[in-house]
Image (tube, helix red, strand yellow):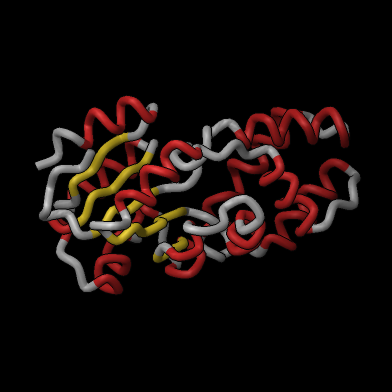
Amino acid sequence: MLNSDLIKYILVDIHGVLTDGQERKRFLEYMSATYGMDYDRHNSLWTDHISALDIDQESASDYLSVVNSTFHTHISVNEYYHLVVKHITVNQVLLDALEKFSQHHQICIVSDNLKELRVALNSIFKLPFSRYLQFFSYELGKTKANGMFSPVLHQLRANPNECLFIDDSAKNIETAKAIGIKSVQFTTNEQLFTDLKLIA
């Protein structure tokens, strides 16, 4: 499927690529139905806080304090993020493809994610996922759109042209392309596999 021998590293996003990308919507709907949290208000809180959470500028405990105060609930950090993960549908077809790619390329997970969500993800992403190199924004203090690729390349001791990046975000794709990383924007498995055949 991937014909280029020049690619040593495949950098892969999680949400919207290794998942169907609908987990946030399903989670917010569940929290609305179960805890009475207004969908739009909850979504707005998530949007307002996620950037700071992803780079560890705000703790998950502080965020949950805001959520609980806003909706008069008493949800713990662990419960909240395990409920997020409960609503994830894994893209098993792509995970299986990555396992085949790993015979010739180093697979690297590159994700904007906070620590608590990463820990919760362990319950659904098992082997071979745990064997892949993993880079998370909360560890590096940068998101993919704001400088994360430089420390990732440094830790890999890789040149940009040795890497292929797969993400569903157009902004992240453009950021990677701007520093010379070959990139494919994910929409469907079929589209991705077609695009990978064109990588030279």
